[in-house]
Image 1 (tube, helix red, strand yellow):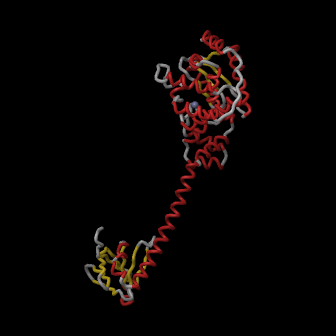
Image 2 (image 1 turned 180 degrees about the vertical axis):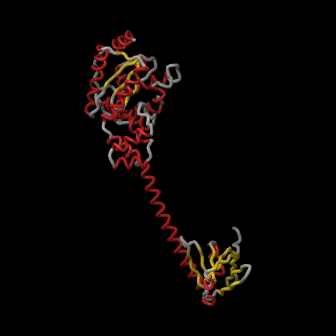
Image 3 (image 1 turned 30 degrees about the horizontal axis):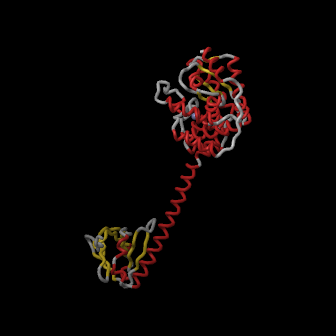
Length: 371
Ligand SMILES: [Zn+2]
């Protein structure tokens, strides 16, 4: 421990001289306390010495004495109160004990106030997801569907779409239970197929799902394809495109748009140049889409194990030339962790399955002939 210094930096206030201030040194002696500056020395004996505190947070220690009532000196060095000689004088000891406890109350009070502010800030951030979701649900579905429609139009310049009535019919027969399930939530879905070798499927805001031929090529069953479709549809129904964009807005904008009408948020969303075309590749969204997608499969009585087995195929293919930046794998890393999570979820569930209608091999052959 450092020896307690007996001199402290201090300021003397002279009320007889327009509260003039002078800096100097305060020294604690055996039975008095002195203030010494270049021009003067002031000595207050311990007897009748009055110690108080002041300043905004009572961080300053003041010394006064009736012998020289016009003078006061103070220091910001609280350690002065720990001088052992003060303890030997019962009167001073009592004053110091009272000062310390009042200071402690202020510190506790300030800490509580500070703690409340921090707690409010933390809860606002924790609640951000809830606010984001609430705001996304305030947005009309048609608004997203309109954006999705425009995006689909732009995709037509980049990809070759397969338009074939009988192929679409085959797919819709197989996917019917799943589509019915989604329709119950008020989402209208549409499916599109594009000629592209990469294993990919993606959902556009509003309910359009685009499936690449590479995904059909690598799937072994309808259940695997519908597993991916279930996941993609969950992105749509959980409003992940919109939530991803809203999430990038400031908390203030989110909360105020939540209170106000959605149109103000719509402006902010468009202004920030939020990319509604792509999902924000958010791990929490992926997990939610996996879980929700699995619930859809179970509710549709489609074997949910298809989803898991397709993730295993993706895992095998990852790192291969089929994995480019546009692929499902880059946005959907089929990690063991993810597969394990789905397996665990499934273990807790009781479910009944029905065979998916339609011959998958025939569908696969059909799409191959068309490409
Ligand atoms: Zn996803």
